[in-house]
Length: 488
Image 1 (cartoon, rainbow, N blue to C red):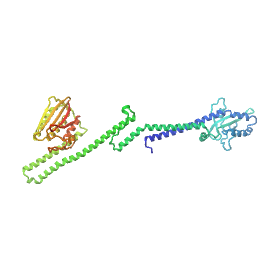
Image 2: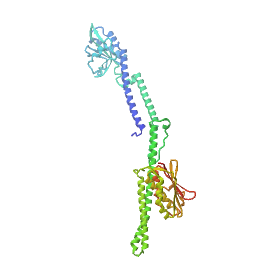
Image 3: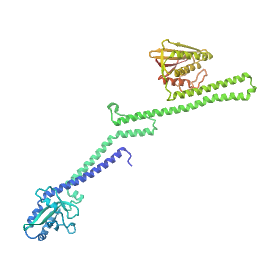
Image 4: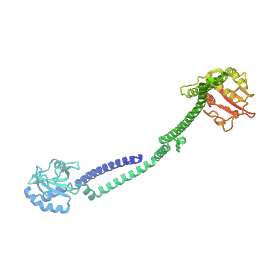
């Protein structure tokens, strides 16, 4: 079964050319037959009249028939392509030159004969062929008049049986043979030429099909690159198809990569969540079991200490679950940042008031440097509050006692820059590119650990505001986080 486009079109072309060849042969055969009949009838128009004048001078028609037998035989020897018939006025055959048993009619129609004998006949005129029950052929005819009365007709069939078949016509007529061979050669040449031209025209189709097959074999993950002239010359439909397919394959490749990356993150998420949940749950279970088995033997301060540790673990678990839910909500396609102008300086001042207590508890100095001309920023105040809180909380957590965390607001043109710097140990060069990844644990000299979601949430909020958070280590020690927002 033919599967390729070129093969199918080639098969269609072959069928069309065969049909065209058959029609051409049939039309050529008809044309040549018509031409031969016309030529034969024109050339032999006076043949019957000549024979009548030289053979039918006296006597009855029956006697003339016997007299013509010798003439019939002589004429058949000279020209075997003619057949002579002697007819009475009604068209009944009285004598003929054909072999015995070959004549199947006993009479022929005199209408075509009379038309032929009219003063201005339109040739060719076909008359009944006595050898066949239905066939007609060109003829020559003349009236036979004896003693001034019409006694009948001399009826001469031109061509006889020589041109009755295609083979006879092909082998017996050089004009038809040459015409047929030239026509078939022209059709064959045309078929080969069109096939080659179509094969050349479908080169880009095959190239595109091979590229698509290669794309499929590579699991739709490797983009296809096709050289097209569309950008330079405008191109045609194939160039457009190649360009669209190349863009589509690139997009599909990106999506597959993103899906694989998200699948990797999902596995890491499950693994990290399992780890971060398992550790506090195991500790909480240990404290609860301690209270359950040893509560009566423990002093009140000991029981209180165990309960406080359990409460802290429960709070840690609650915070982890809350951050997971918040991150899932931020990743939802349905959540859109409701941006509106608001004074960023007031928001930062309120957040600093809230963090003074935790900072003092860790013996960290929390200060601010806010320019007076900061003005308004356009954003979702609730989401930006959460992002700034996470950045400040992270800075306080990783700053050792006696250190300092500084929050600064400064306007630069149409942007307002928020920076949070600390005097902690800084971030290692190995951890710096991954600091905003979910559940990434950066190694620190302070021994502090986190579940790795606070900074990821802050970065996601920044992306929803068409910006990003940058982090770098300070030359004098510590790190600085920077977030730029557009003025409102």
